[in-house]
Structure formats: structure tokens, C-alpha cells
Image 1: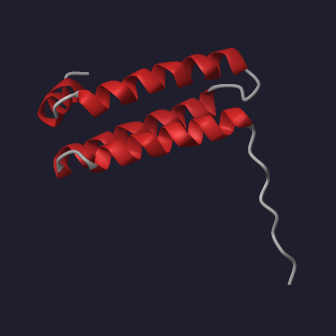
Image 2: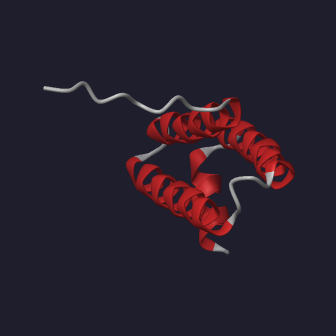
Length: 90
């Protein structure tokens, strides 16, 4: 049986995964209704960006990371009832 070696992740990939996990962790602290909505929104946004952005476009990825960190900080501090109302208006 051969061991499967996992490919090492770059620093920027680790940051993206950390941000994604941060969103999911924060979503768990919200109401069940908001939890599902936030998870769905985060998952679709990350998936969309993974497919549409060139992996070598570091400037754009770093911009999205900064923007995502700001959004995560806002999500952590905002009342969950307000989040659901804001998300539904888009």
C-alpha cells in the first residue's frame, strides 16, 4: 500500500483556507436560520472565486483576502438578526 502524499499548500492557499474556516466557525455562532444562509453564501462565493480567478493573479487574490477579513470581522460583531436582513436585500 503506497502512502498518498498531500501536496503542500502555499502561504496564500493557507490564508484562503483559514479565512474560509473562520467564516464557517463564525456562522456556527449565529442562529440556525442565519447559520445555513451564511454557510451557503460563503461556500458559493468561495467556489465562484476559485473558478473565475487565475491562481497566479496574486494581487487580486490578496485583495479578496483583505476584503474577506474585513467582512469576517463585521460578521463577528454584527447582531445575527441584522445579518439575515442585509443578506436578503442583495
